Length: 528
View 1 (cartoon, rainbow, N blue to C red):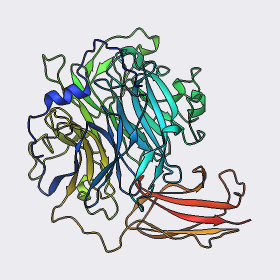
View 2 (view 1 turned 90 degrees about the vertical axis):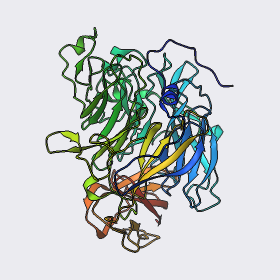
View 3 (view 1 turned 180 degrees about the vertical axis):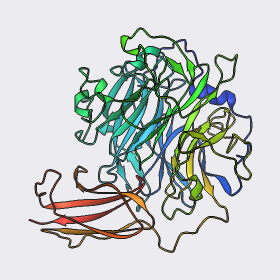
View 4 (view 1 turned 180 degrees about the horizontal axis):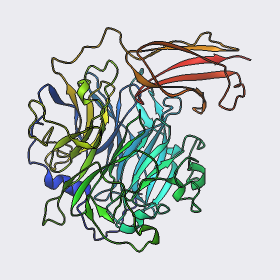
């Protein structure tokens, strides 16, 4: 039986009400610069809040209000199917089933992670489920959550119906990053040991298989987290703090930088950039460039927080204005991606306004982040795109397009969608025939002393090469993230693990990742 949340007086409209009030009564066409096309992949979803790609290009979408996970096969033709329902979730205006992340070892370790609200407590839960079925997209296309595999990774407090955060993503470092709002307790965002107003960084790949949890927080705290020496184990999970409601955030795989969209209170919506661990983004001492409220915490005196890289004002005189900034992330062209944006977009930061409907892009001029200059067909000097109300999550697709989840159209149910923005202009460079990331079969296989590993990449990229056992545990990072030019490359693996011990005989999977996105694997048999 689903447990419902107690009702509390809240100070800002929730995600559901906010989007329903702001959305137009009928569908409108998105407005984009010349050469760009916005198109639906699937429509008719129910309150689609967040999305994530599987390595084979299929998409997982969460439905906030009925707690279902939807599998989208882009096709053509595009199809949808229900993967399952996440249990122990209760809906609230800014809660329910929110974020989804795919285990970076998939399909060797077929786990999905979810950000959910208001289970018994009430609390925020990060949970993990195992998945069965067609894991690599080569079979009948059917997958299912294993309802008996539910593992509670983390519990966080949830006293209010709003300010829950809501997303989680794996970084190129294989760590799980989780956003938590301040839960209506402003000054707790300034205390690293309290799980409110934070971006957390968790080491979850070593957790045991099967159901259970939550583990001791010390067991999922990476030793290189910024507050690992803190006496409180909760602080050891914190990566960034001083945030109000970071509902959406995005990780730039080549750099590890995190673009955080922090929803404001009365004055400003912020885009923050976490370039190093341990940054304090100032809430509630500051909101955008404005001074906020004072906190009694002794360690907040004289704080000089990290400034947002971009902010825009909220409607004046409207204390509960329906405004919510959404991170579009850092754009990176996909090698040979047929929908990749032109080169001038490389490294741009995108953002959208989920209720006012605009999209904007930022460029770094060598000293600071600024709004990019207008391009032909752009709807206004500030707005790169318009009519994006209801967009709640963005992700770079394997085709180089910018995909997004649309929560609703016109406030009506069953009008959510997965859509994409792609470049279709004549200036795009068509991919060379067969140009794609390719990992060759290891030589020899079976191997007893050394294995030669070769791959071909169509363009310069940051590459990681790793070996996993059949249980999904990483046994060796053969190549840590490093830049390689286009062409064929070869390395040797001495069949030792990270501590220099020979791996036992068995089956291993060699996995190559380029720019934190494109991923290919090959099987290797190791003999005595």
